[in-house]
Length: 192
Image 1 (cartoon, rainbow, N blue to C red):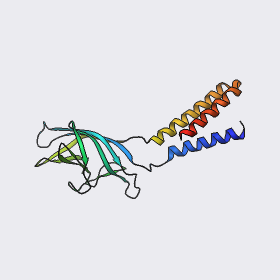
Image 2 (image 1 turned 90 degrees about the vertical axis):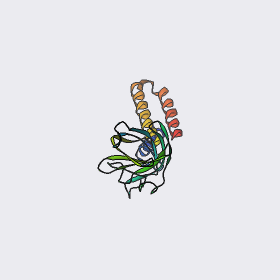
Image 3 (image 1 turned 90 degrees about the horizontal axis):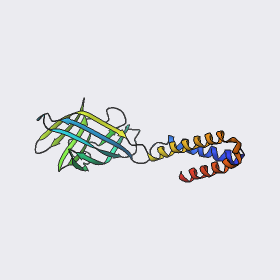
Image 4 (image 1 turned 120 degrees about the vertical axis):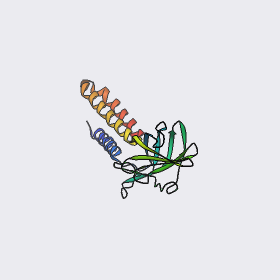
């Protein structure tokens, strides 16, 4: 392989590696879901799921600030995220470690009712419907949605490995494979 091709492969590999290792610099997205039963009425069950959009990770607080929410609660669309401190001292922080929420949690509205989801020895949802309702949660999950640059980096590395496998299997066709390889590398560089 001549110098130009080695240089192109080195640059492409470096870009792919750095892309996969980059910390998120834009908003992070998390899927959430939870369910529980009311402490007042065992027939009153809550099921909620959706997506949280956060500010970039803050290493000083080891958390993300939730800035938007979408989803449903018992089939009703979640209407809005409540600003910090507006319902039961919510701070709208999503912690990077377990538990994912602190004792203030995040608050939102669904069907015109305010709800606060937080952690105090267990995950709990409290709502205000003229009176407070409490739901100890039997299930709770928050999972990050992979960032697109990470996925692009993984795909790029996979393509490079595949190209190398093709070259090693068809080494006797070396003159015809190299232009294809150069074309694929250039296409990858354009994607990045």
